[in-house]
Image 1 (cartoon, rainbow, N blue to C red):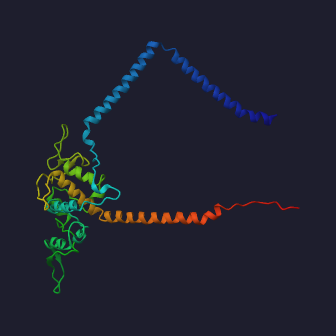
Image 2 (image 1 turned 90 degrees about the vertical axis):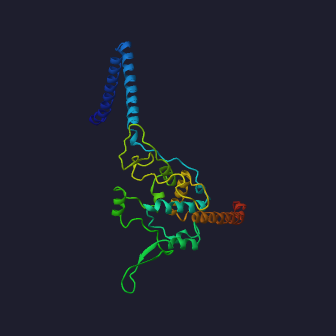
Image 3 (image 1 turned 30 degrees about the vertical axis):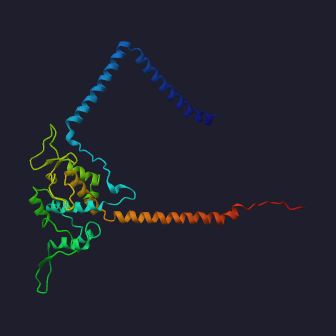
Length: 308
């Protein structure tokens, strides 16, 4: 009897807790039901006003602090974005010209050599001629002295400054980044580069930009130390293409995307070859499977009970 009584204790406690909760809920409901209809309407109106006021305050806060939000670069229809599309090599050649004549004055490309241009933007003779336009420090020679020589295909693009401190001193304390992999180092890739180069404008009302900086809504923080580098007819293309701002930005963005991923075309070419080979292997495998398994799948197994 004592054991049965002990077993009933948890059940009784659980029932008492449930009854207590029900009583509390009924008490709350009865307290709310005692409120008059006018007071209920007033409480509902106050709740709606509070929610509306909070929404208005949040909207005004976002509009007043618009400088905290930068624009995201839109998606542009690049020619090389297709599954089997390659770079526009004429655009790459023009993009190198934009980098050489404009961007190389401040930005380096430490990981790109003149030999990388062969078969992509220039022929071997043209790449040699480009390299020989620069003088590179080499040595030591037989007497232990350093000397300058014309560039070779194995040389990397020359730096505009000797070191980072000289670069900062020449650019109001800002360090121009290396452009070798800049297209993959920024969110948006070449879309971001094109938007950044073409996105300079006057700051909106309520946004103050310090004197050495320039307003660009696509740059994080919207204040960038680089002045607008491109504008209409800043250079003259070798092939006669009109050098508009959008054309200049498009060509140099393509070139910087190629420099960050020079294996782009070869990777897609190898992928196409792999798909062709795998499709043939798949067809041969399907045929062999049908041939080898046709005997087993058409076989009929019958069981005959032994006769006694």
